[in-house]
Length: 396
Image (cartoon, rainbow, N blue to C red; front, side, top):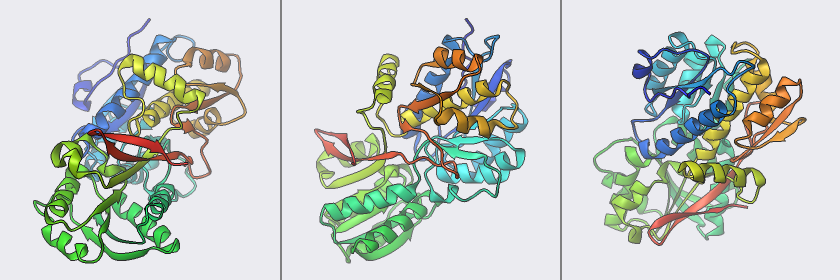
């Protein structure tokens, strides 16, 4: 049995002999969310491990290689990373990046012009939905923030926040979800008392906090914790500007608890993409993840496993690692008709495809049926601090 070739940087792989089936995996190993990124990358590697342990690719058992590069949650870095993956490493497809700005930039500048399919694992900006013009090359295994923004607005109203101030980082992801939230919240009868952008990576946000803090006791914060979110919340807590905090997954990190203290986060709630843990697919995924020491329920972790497994299924169904026509096969293996395939069931799927049959992958993150724009519906959870740690509850 062959051994999976896994790498942590493109630089390392430049000196590594590669063969067989190669996919590119641009991840945010540096930048504002390395802690969030780490288990996501582990899930990608776990999927590759399962594929290779159960027969690899095609009839001759070619190795399924994950070639990793650092997109740093930065559009420019992502363009550079994916350019190398496509033009130098000659990958068949892209799984990732994890950040919306990175996914959009590399798709527009690199992968779409090259005719390469991108399957993002956590890029949730609504801007991805309509960015293509007849190419059908961009997909994702997490729901659009067009859905999360509405879920967050419903959560705010359910908690009695009939007025709220909004602060969002001036980047693609946070600006987009803030816009969706504001529209949905106002449509539900809520009053937005302030709606202000803040620049990432400032040493202090005291002036911003003072301005919007005078308008409401409630703050909807859309930011990455590692590029200003922690600092802004700290300033808000120090000045007593707000009593309640609500926001999206960019703020959901153990680092927030470590830096601000669990005792200060009792009135903070953040939403994120989530899995329905009542399904057989999630139970199967969790057993595999637990065995490997991968946190099954962490944000976007099952989405990353699903994306990697789905891409391998699509390539297997295509019968070659050619780029052309791969999107059609990706849609086919993700949806009915076909025999249901759960996480880890590579050998079963491989046998069905070899006999000319059809498969329908049901993932740990949920049903991965792509709509006409390459989006999935998905689920969301709300997380609050309980006994010093984040505790998630699925939003029904």
